[in-house]
Image 1 (tube, one colour):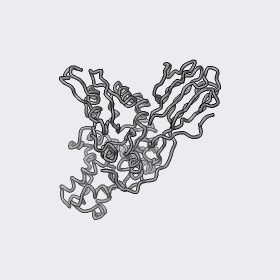
Image 2 (cartoon, rainbow, N blue to C red):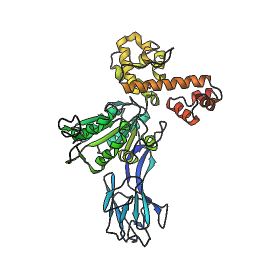
Image 3 (cartoon, one colour):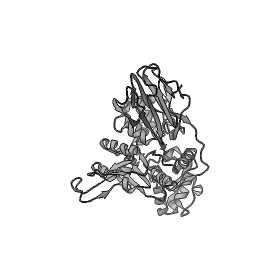
Image 4 (tube, rainbow, N blue to C red):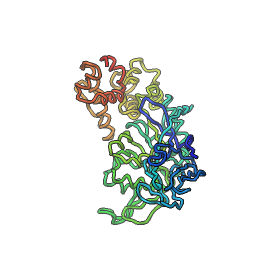
Length: 454
């Protein structure tokens, strides 16, 4: 009959919001959406799963339009291949008859008058925190960080595709470097493509390369990142900035492990590990039509969410001492008032902002360490309003300024509004659920709303 109580578990990925430390295992299955048992779920094993009306099949379907052994699903690494077994009525994938093809989440498989849906699900699990307080250039003794280290230690030696999620400055680049250095590809190249720093019209050329005459200005052959990363790791940063029309081409590379330079018809085999990163919630981007669902599932074999600094306040002392490097007093030797300033700052720029603040204060001398303004680099809030840190890259400065504006607006809104969060939402002219999300984002969800009776 059916092996539907167990299934092959794919690599681990994180799930849920910032307050959750839960991890989950990816599980793939077939759901019968039309046939003798609509709604029945059949978990796919780690090897070969045969579907047909014979009792000897792994998935038995008692329907006269289904052959005795109609089709099979075969796992190939982290991919699933559907293959027709010379059936009478053929096997259709999303309406097209196929002999064999790779499955994507949500794909419909038609066999006679029976229809299955290929679905990816997730089972919640717990992972024991690592005993280490670092992984490559990442530091942290908090449970959140040590859980992440445990996951990175497991996934780094593999070729598994990884998706990193986190705000600007949380350490996505350091995580990629650490994974690369701790993998079998560590002696190969680490090639970075920052979709946010490249003109959208040039991203395709940056990835795939081009030949002479491929487009206006293509004066010669140019190798792209896919080719330059052979034998190593390809890091696609700011993935949320990748144009929609380019995403199917990247998906094809990931599935077929072959690419073609722009203007050329010569296929080139692709042999590199892919790590991608996004500062935005990619599932939300999928839901709002700004990112392809099939590419999301292909990249999220392992998803790791890097926590913001305000979510791991207990790591500030460790990070401070590391960035100071013995050039000034240790965090434990600072005056209590100075420690409080460092610990209570919202850190919209995360670890990058902390590092810059430490370096700035060391440049000012020991006296600057106890000052109320200098250690925090609090350029985002002054009596007259907000100002940007013009020493940062454009995108980082913009995001930091917007975060600072949101937090200051929320603080003043809750101070003057009546009627708790509901009243504040009405006064701000925004939906109450959206206000709750903003309060949670800035760590103001509980304490501030209690002050206002919300």
